[in-house]
Length: 481
Image (cartoon, rainbow, N blue to C red; front, side, top):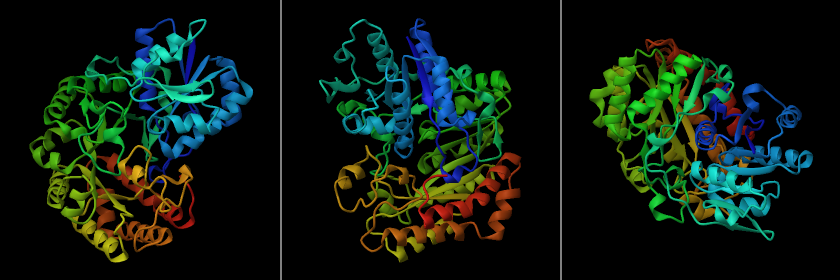
C-alpha cells in the first residue's frame, strides 16, 4: 500500500506575496504513518513548491504509482482539490482519492454527493483515522464501516461512520516528517527564505461565530468542540531544532490561532531555544488578553527570536467584540501593541468588515480606531460564512449569501451585503481602508526601519508591495492570486 500526500497546483492569498508553504498536516500525518505502519509507503508531492503544472503532476503520479492519494485543504482552495482529483480520476481511475482538512470536515456528505471524484473523506482528526483506513483498504475485501471518523458511499449514498475521539496528548505524536518535503523551496512574504509554517496546537478556547478553529473537529461529539490542546514548549523546541539544524530553516511561522494560550509553554519554548542556542526567527498569532497577562515574557520572547505577532482587533467597540465571541477589549489590544513594540516585536493587526449592522460610518470609525491602536501592519478581512462556522449555519440557505463560488471565500471579497451596504460598497470601503492605513509616511518609515531585525523590514516591504494587488482583488473581483 502506498499513499501520496498531494498539494495540487494552486494560488496563494494575496497578502502573502510570493509564498510557497508546506502543509503542516501532511507532515504530521506522514510521520504518524511511518511510525505506526512501516509496511505503508508514504510520499509527498508539493506541486506549488515545485511549480508543477497539472500535466506534470499527472506525470509524477504515473511515476510514483500510489494506491491512495490524500488531499487536504480549507474552503478557498477546495476547487483546486476538485480540479486535480478530476484529472487524476480520468487518467488513473483505480487510485483512491481521500479528502481531508477543514472544508471536508465541515461538509463531508455534501462533498461526497457533489463530487464523485472524491472517494472517501476524513472527518475530524486524521492520524488514527487515516492509519486504520489504509489498513482496511489493504484488505482483500475492505469494509469501510469498520473505520470510525470517515465518510464514504454505501450503495451510492454518502454515509458517515461513528465519530472519533480526539488525541489528548499531542506530545505523543512523532516529530513531523519534514524529510519528505522539498524543504529548500519554501518562502513566505516574498523575502523570507527557508520559512516553514508549523502548527503547535489544535482547537481554540474562543468561540467567535465567524471562525471554524474552535469547532473544526467532528461536531457529533460535543467533547470535541471548543477544546484547546497544545504541544509542550519543549516539544515545540524539538521541532524547531530539527528544522534549524537539519534543514537550515531561518523562519518559524507558528500558525495556531492562539499560540499564547498558556504562558508556561511560551516560557518553556523560549528557555529551550536559548539553552540550545538555536539561531532562527519566529512569529505567531495571539490573543490580546493573553498578551497583556504575559508582558513580562516579551523580553525573553524577543531574545529567543520572536520578531512579529498577529493581534486580532476585528471591531471598533468592546461591545461588538463581546457580541462576536471575541471577549477581549480595545484597551488590551492597545496595551499589547505598545508593549510589543517597546520590546522590538512588530505587530500585524487584523480587522474585519461586513458585519450585519455595518454601514459606511461604522467602517470609517473602525478605520479611525485601527489608526489609533496603530499596529505596524494590517490586514482587512471581509466577513466570510465559512462552512463549519455558526455564521454558515445562519446564512447557508439565505439569499444573503450572494456568492456561492468558494474560490472567492478568501476574505478579500464581500460574500454578503449588510443591512446598509451592498457587496460593491463593502469592497470599495475595504480597498479605501487598506490604502489609507498604508499611506502614512511615518508608519511606513517605522515599518521598514523601526525594528532591529532585517526580516521585519523585509516582511513590511512585501505588505507595501501587495497593496495595489489587494486593491485589485477588492475592486475587480479577482480570486486569490
